[in-house]
Length: 67
Image: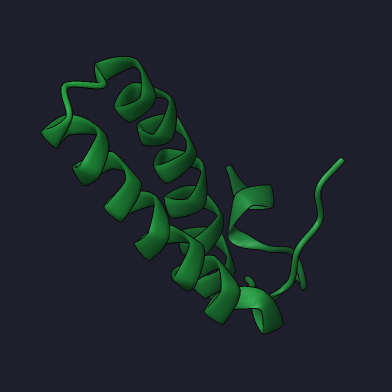
């Protein structure tokens, strides 16, 4: 189980930047499987970042809980 808070947004943004660099390098070397695996990581990071950057609703729950 993974739980994070907005205080870790800088680390998530830094990891996102690093993953983008890994994807670019892998594609340049023709390593499509490595690029694809890291695209999944990038998607997960994008979801985490978007959720943490979305203000909580008035009931005190996060945006992900409102879905």
